[in-house]
Image (cartoon, rainbow, N blue to C red; front, side):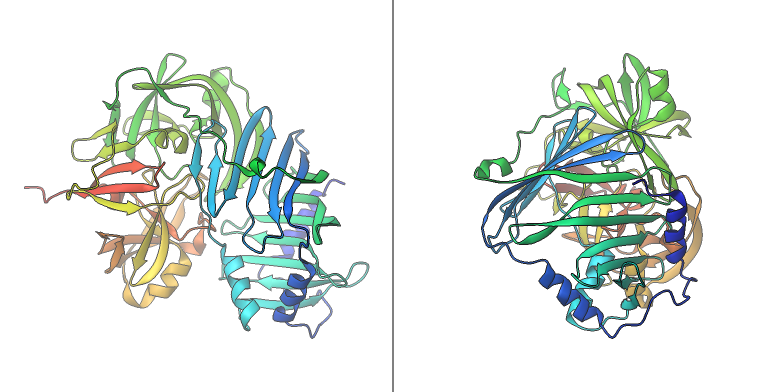
Length: 509
């Protein structure tokens, strides 16, 4: 059944902070009691082994996505798993093996991966232990289906409602409003039990960004005997050398960032180097002019609505390396920066192929080797990859924060939750306006954070912006460090080993 657009609009209305009319019957059940019932309903797998599930997702745009999911169950520890996603002939993978998380891009590159709890998950974890004002029971829905409704409001900008079956305590629906006010709805139904644990066999998804909806159906499940099905696949480096390395790239430095010349089918273009991008992206109009075809279109937000899709380029040359049959992410991205048209972002698949050295003083970018571990001029900092983007574990006024390293951003941004924890120690400087790939101009306030560090790096005093209403913020990090900090260093990015090397410049004489 296609979820109607009017139903989506109603869901968005119910998540409006101003909509507090009594919609539910009262209940004496507390959030802690509900979460305990939910945990008990999840059951225990009494027959350990490797279990296989195949899911097929169809969208109203005509796309078909197949997910093959392998998981260990019943071992009493965190499950190993592997998910193989296939659509339009492209294949991506992700998984966890012996506590090591990994992912494989559509271009074949295998990289470490990590993930953090969302603000909703963190609030729920706290509420399961003791009463938490961020989590409250709204009541129980009326006939024909009776469901307990739990509301999670981690802060003033985020809101989520979870609906649990009043008889079985299984999760039936989630409605989530993100920082960009987009609302996403998942409806789970037709549960079956596999190894003593309930599994939904149907999930319907919709959002407030477009009329597109999707339905996911479990089409097969089985118990398997081969643990090698969970193995990490062989990595394939998409960019291979055609000239001797190390080598310097054709680049241009300026206030908006680092631009790299890229040749597509023999014609030159400029891309922005962007460690905050999880893919290499290309402008939608250029894809059409090149005769390419978009596929797998979907909607998202990043400081405004963004329409994403995929395309395949026959060949891409970047200085001494090239890639063939290369998968790019397609967005609207044609800007004038530093006097030239910038038609794309050079993100993970390129940066992760080989160590990359950026020298802001000499204005050079090179495919190079990593510094020696014994070289005292360099500070090595662990930068785990989160969805193919390097993150740094920082301390801001002694509060922990996970910040992306973002060479594509001129500024540093910290999220509202971090600001609230350090507000008494920072100094307001000025107001400013920022934008992300969604294109909307966002109001922000600049602050000076006196004490900021990451590993062996001292970053204070740190100039950081906080965006009004949290617009454009991710749910799985605390912000990002931009060029206003990074251009004080000579930098080497080593994605494969999840390390970044920093060499601070001396004072200009």
